[in-house]
Length: 518
Length: 99
Image (cartoon, rainbow over all chains, first blue to last red; front, side, top):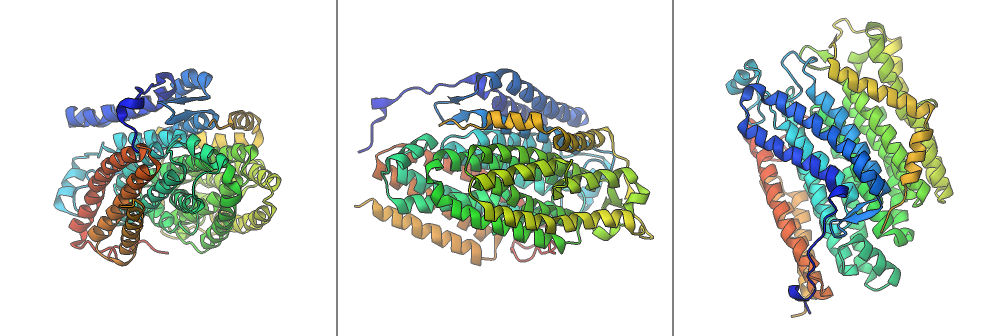
């Protein structure tokens, strides 16, 4: 029988101190929508930029000052868990979003303005588009959209029941579908990427939702704590649990871009405006892995003997396919996309360990990966053919002679992806491999180590191309980055080196934070 | 009637939607199939709520409807933009992004 509402209805409680960072980000996004409606076009962009950056900074400060000392509590009637991993991931997402926002601001590298089309609604190449370009209009809706997405990511890593989990996933994804389609240059590619991302993304969310229904059917509860309890008491039907686990995993594998659910990654990363690619590649991956860790370690923590074999297969496939396909790429954005698929495989190695060290090593790896990714995509925006980016690899030949700084910094990020010592990528790989060995996943580590060498080949190939070949006769122009891009690249480079040379503090932070609450 | 039958129905609807996404060529129809999958999940949630005697499943269904409505707004915006550019809503036509 259905319980009547009047029987056990308690009004929900909200712990505003714990929720404050998320509320600030969502509040900033809503104010951004109002700014869109009520501010005249002249100052609108300035207001939106300031609002976006200030919101993220304030949310980060509040996260550290107010939320962090009180962590370890369930908030909003148990629907949100503000524990160590949640705060760690939220902080990481805010920092990475701030760096990406700096790339969104940049107007110096493209003569016509920022990386976004003046109006997504105009037909590419039409008279109305040319008119808006000439008037230097900019699509300022980008800012509230990106803020909503950041808010969704922060909620996603903290969600503690199936409903919050699904809603947060959609709040994170829906604005991204639009942002992908708003590139200023090569708009047909951008629109195509948006369509592909949207259709495949909602297809995978449907799988995740159907899987959630079966987890609910198995346990009779939508909260992760309830699912964990029913698992340990062993009530419920196993087929429901198996179907639910598998389908939820499909949805999450899609979001992190794991093989065989990776086919969207190269297309979307190539078609999207490069600052959005940086944002997606870094922050979305942190959020998706954060949520994956929570549902599989908290709700299904006692069921790991059943989900780990699936993770084994997907991890090996992701590392192998990602590394091999990256070798064949001729476009630098696509190559970085396949490299991010391979990196997802290395991160999955840590997840598969199913232990506290697996959790903390994954957290560290995501930070290291996020900095290097944003930095690499930021540099892609600087090498240009006329108006649009020169993404074909042959155009990057001889860059080391023409711009030693761009070539050197890009080499640093590529070496970090490859996992060369003294960069953050080495420490990250070392930690996830160590956790996997201790967690009994040695074969995964062997595959990972072999294919690290394969992956190193295509990273080093770009470095060789930049330093040891002659520049083409019609060499691409090198844009002088503005202050915003320079700052973002500098922070990413400093982070990559610092995490490689003195990783101690961040490792300690991750280990300290690596405890989920149920 | 046995509520389990609704679970079978929801699974059938979900499979019809998933197959539709894979075989249909018009972006609008693909999108409708995705909506069918979401609604199949709703039916599953409500059936499980009945089976488990826990009203949470019904609450989820309401939220999913709202999310699906938001998704329609985004999806149609993207599809209409593509259609205006290319005069076609076929998912086979946009094929610039490849190796």
